Image 1 (cartoon, rainbow, N blue to C red):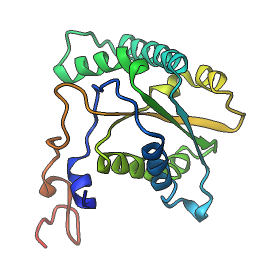
Image 2 (image 1 turned 30 degrees about the horizontal axis):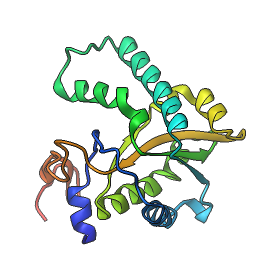
Image 3 (image 1 turned 60 degrees about the vertical axis):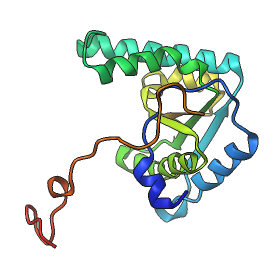
Image 4 (image 1 turned 180 degrees about the vertical axis):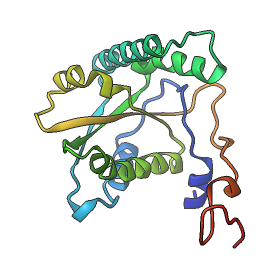
Length: 198
């Protein structure tokens, strides 16, 4: 797949088949992931690939608990719009998805710096997976269960979970492409804010 094709068709995938993902594809995705830039090329990241069914089930339970907590504290309910309901369905089945990649970054006082040092790597991961015909979904609810996630995965002090990326083959009704984006004139200006002509 052409790079621009991957950029234009990559989207969050929330339903997956049970088909396993090959070691070769996982390795290829991770090699692309760590090619991303980071401040001073420090590469302050670590990625834990979880394929064991029991470990995935436990991560899924933590993810669901975080989802329930977020729903209760935002006053959200399952009768809310479709996109929120699809998120609940996804959250209930996270533990069944064939591959989890939990993304960790070295903890720093500056949260913006923490993110800037890993989000480009995560974007590489998502694009590489799309190129291979594999679906992904970026989720951040692991942050709400940080201590439990770290204990489960034997993570040393000094590291913070930033995201859990699900990885697998597209399930029923899923497809690449079609995610809505705002038109350029709403989000881009030239020379000064609000000037929309090149």
